[in-house]
Length: 494
Image (tube, rainbow, N blue to C red):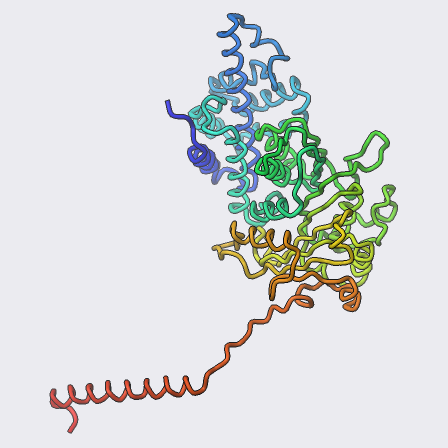
């Protein structure tokens, strides 16, 4: 029997969104679909493993022994129980989630906030349709054509919801190629501790794992940490990592600036080898009052202005880098040139030689905002040849135009990474700039100040142009002569 392919799974999941369409807001689809996908997956894997043990050892203990499973699924949370319900289905699903959380400490808080028991939004008739739809696919390990398929399908859905929900989607989705670019710039390695302080749906952590695999490394001894303040997005992140087979990682819930939760036993900030993030652009209510009395010493270069929290996130990231740590963060272009408090913070970061690179991105890559963004690479351990210098690259012209969003292509990512790795000047594309030059520019990092982005006008060969013009005039005269000849034959004219 053929196994389930990624394409089949993706279209099946998208069809589940179509079942919900019209009943609930598109920005809420994800919670319900992800919840059911997760429930079905845990149930199918549990039953698959219990049956295997029963057949191999001729003993049914795996149906009851919690230690036999990564996730123990009690009877009332199994799909076979949910499938036979014909009324009060929402309540049955809610109880299944509660039972899973009771049995599995790592799932506490992940599922309970998804409420299926809203009869107006989700009547039994609609839920019956959804349950039947999910019942038609087998999500056991044996039936998947590739091991990481669920995680991939999950990412596909997150992207689709960002497309579908537009601006709302941008809260939890960074385009895959942008993430791939940052990961390829900061190059995480096996054995490292990696953190995303605004973790969203976890895509940056997942791609860090993918990068290590692609380099032949073993990601199993990688520590992944993150923090997310939005409850639903935090749940999605936890489920996303679990569906990717990444279970032993620490994802905290809460506001990173106001209340950092990634602390050690000494209640100090944990330090990381790599930090990667796409914080909300120019967040207005970011926590300025709390920053003024910050007990972690994160804002030593200055307190950012009340209406733009960009440098609050940058300084938090710098504070959580160990002495060899490197960070990659997506920022709006304004952080490169805005003055006032932000100018002072930028000056401090540059004087401490923490800024390694500025990568300008094309505009309109992100959901919900057309403003151009850039990637800042921050490094506490620059190589000798990089000290006292900043690598500045203008990648704004390399992209594929899309209907709603522009898209980075693989060749655009490769071009940036190769130039960054080479650390050499390329005309109209990138430059290694001395800090002295940046100081002369009052620590303004606007890319156009360092890279000439003007298009050269083509020189006109006057002689050749006159020759072409004469030739065109001659052709016109010949055509006119022919036309008048025809008209004369037809009896028009003289």
